[in-house]
Length: 260
Ligand SMILES: NC(=O)c1ccc[n+]([C@@H]2O[C@H](COP(=O)([O-])OP(=O)(O)OC[C@H]3O[C@@H](n4cnc5c(N)ncnc54)[C@H](O)[C@@H]3O)[C@@H](O)[C@H]2O)c1
Image (tube, rainbow, N blue to C red; front, side, top):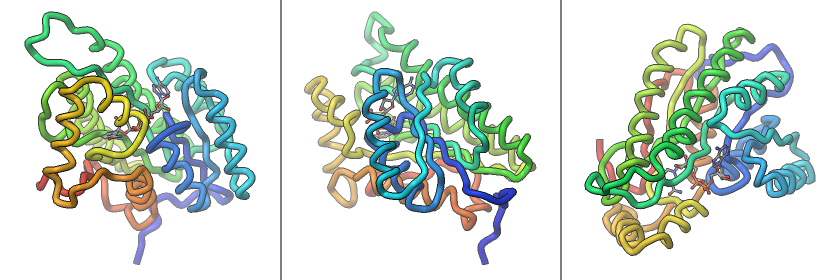
């Protein structure tokens, strides 16, 4: 029997997904809306039109959807975004940037700060303000983050990005340990190559990137790229009542690349 660890005070549950005007985040929003959540689409101001068009599309489908523009790397913006919500049951910290191809032997650290600010600080802020709100609500909740296959194993030219994705696993464990007593579970997904704008841009960015990505596909057990909807299905399960005994985990969704 499923254990309901997120018994709400009644009414429709609310799920906020960061970086959800595109790609994996967009698919997660679509899936959680279908699961019955009122969904909040977060993205950067620059993606306002896309986010609003997506919200309008969801409303046409009969779902409750709104847009909350904020830069996840900005303390005040994340705090205000979370505090502006009537309630929050699910936080999916999905937004990230992909760092340019980089190696330990490069004589610069271009891209380091931005990648850490968006990917790691962004996760920290989303976890933090979601946790504070969920504790105040008193009925628990679900927090999900986005790691990566390169948060589990090295790949050529992914030094900075990989470091953020490893750190997100640590943050997830630490938050899960601290928040379990409040009926809040914290987990993250670790995708292999998923067919999104981010992946396409990265593959087009340099021959090293394209070669590495093709190697990822060719060495996986299933031998294909994954789809955003497949990650969304995993998130849907991790936020469900049935997943209440799973916390602190990084769940691989990579078509069989990392076997642990
Ligand atoms: N696509 C893949 O192959 C893959 C593999 C492993 C992990 N991931 C992870 O999955 C997540 C989603 O990736 P995706 O492929 O859908 O990426 P994407 O680039 O298609 O979408 C990311 C979204 O985040 C938004 N964003 C960027 N910076 C932001 C900020 N500071 N504040 C708010 N929003 C911001 C972007 O505008 C964009 O809409 C990321 O965390 C990524 O690292 C993706």
